Structure formats: C-alpha cells, structure tokens
Length: 414
Ligand code: GAL
Image 1: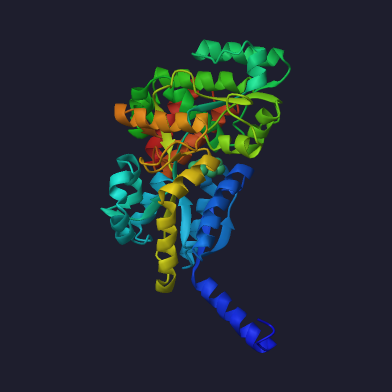
Image 2: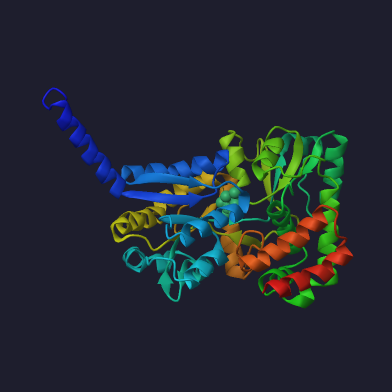
C-alpha cells in the first residue's frame, strides 16, 4: 500500500480504520481475572474480534463480584455506563428496576432464546417480560475439588457422607498436607456454606436461603450447619485469611492441599494448569447433595447506552447465545452452557456431569439459587448472610449466637 499512497494518505486510511473499529466496540466490566477466567474471557474477546467488534476491558478483581458492583455503581451514577456488565441474578433485577438496562427483545425473538434458555435463568435475564441480559453459563457451588494423588494415598474412596468426609480430612492431615483450603473472605466462606446448608436437605436450603424463612434461619438445623462449617474451618491452614479462591485451587493442584469446596469456576484453574479430571483431580458433589444443584449463572447485563453503540451491544448478546460459542466458552470456564440444546461432546467428565446434574435437578425441582453467588436473595440480604457466616468462620460467633444473629440480620436487610 505504501508504494501507491503517500504517507499522509496511509495515515488517513489507518485513522478511518481506527474510527470504524472504535464505533464497533464494547466496553465490558467483569471480575474474571484469574488464569482460568481470563482464558475463558479470551474466547469471548476472540469471537467478537472475528466479527469486527473491539473490546475495552474493565476488570475489577474479586470473586463473586462485590467489588465490581461497587465500581459499576460509580460509573452509572456518573452517567457513563459500560456496554455490558458481568452480573449475577438479583443484581440484574435491581438494575432493571432502576430502568438502567437496555432491551434485547428483537435479538432474542429472532434467535428463539425463549425456547432454549431455561426458565430458572429467564427469571433473571428478563424483567417485566423483556430481555435485559444475555446468560453465558450456569455454574454451581456444591462441588468439592480433590487432589487425586492425595485421595489415592488415603484409600481412593470419595466420601459419601459427612462422617466419611471428616475421616478423609483426618487422613489428609496425617499425610502432612493442608486438608482443606478456603474461606479467605466472606464470599468464599459463604460459598462453602452453600454446600453445607444444602447437605442438610433441599427443603431446608430453600426455606432458609431462597424463601428467607426466619424459622429456618434460626433453626437447630442451621445451628448444625454452622457447627459443621466450624469443623471444616478447623482443617484449614493458618494462612487462609485474605487468600483468593484461585490461590486455594493452586494449592490443591500442586498437592499442597487435599481439597477445596468451591463452585466449578475452580475447574477452570485445573484445566488451565493442564490437569485432567479423574487423573489429576476429582470433582464430586458435596456429600449428601448429589441430585441437587445450587446454581448461579453469569449474565451480561446490557446497559442503556448511546444509540450508535447499540449495534455492537446487540451483536455481543447474539454472539454469547450462539451454541458453538456456548460450548467453546464453557469448556474453558468450567461451567455448563446456559442453553439446553448445546451438545456435551466437547466437555470433559466434570463438565458432562455438570450438564447432567443440572438437567436432573431442573427436572426434579432441586435446582436452587446460590445464596453466596447472587441467586438466593438481593444484595442487601446476601451481604447480611456473608457477615454472619464470615464471623462464624473466623471464630467471632458461636453457632448458638449465629442462629440468633442470622434471622435478625436478614430481617433488617430485607
Ligand atoms: C462467581 C462467578 C464465576 C466466577 C467466580 C469467581 O460469582 O459466577 O464466573 O467468576 O465468581 O470469580
């Protein structure tokens, strides 16, 4: 080109290119900053790149997204909303209520989203009958990730109930490794607590963490849940505080720790480290929760933005819902697709299990919103639960005190 055009003309052509690029650009706020998360996000960036859509990255670190939501509030308040924001359940509904979100109805109708995205997700991706967010995946929190070599050394049997779980932790201790890693912050501890509560019964979980029934929140069963959480904490190393979930995963990957109780985004870290399920690590449902799923779905909530930016926003929403993208992305992310018609062919054994478990739970009515990850209750209530769980985890509250505090804190936050 240089041969035929003067340098000023080259600059003009290049600038025109930049301008076109900038017009077809999405600014995306998210908290996918760990190795596995970034790898998954890259699948989305690359997909948009092939469609000529540029990416302005706005990462805000912190599992569960609380920090990201604080940054978002500041952005929207100053009248400068990003194009798309990674968001969870009740936060999406809250923004929709404020009238801050755009409208994806035409794209959704053209592509038949209503038929392929399950009702449990539509409850949050639609508001007042209108599509406001594009669901990317379905994660679930009731998983345990175990180092396979450590498990083999301990006899190789996956724990089938609470007592076997404790017996395994004792064996890990005897091996000289950290039995469990986790609980480094309130979100992390509450993610562990989701599983503990669920293991005491589906109805109990639902009454406490979806219906917010004060009797369940203050019950003997909840006391038992706090007692079990305290027991698990006694197997965690002294350096847990402030450690992010992906560093916990790294300890299990390296064999420094035996297990982690965490949502299946943890699998993204194992995959990124080239670890293979069944060979290097084991994924299992928290004992007593097989057949049930506490879910959370990452969605991109689409904000009201300047009219000239809307086409790129709609293209992004459409790209996210494409079945081939749903497969490629979720294989890397550790989650199940948000659509029910995506083949499980490319998924590893844990991914296939996630997809099958989700279907089973959805058919049986045992699919419940994760309290820790934004699908149990609105943010104010979730934060109240975080606070009580975190204080128990850190030894500041006894289980007896916690079952008095929990219903009171939830009532005050409602
Ligand atoms: C969850 C989110 C996951 C993962 C995790 C840790 O809330 O749904 O996609 O990012 O936080 O960052």
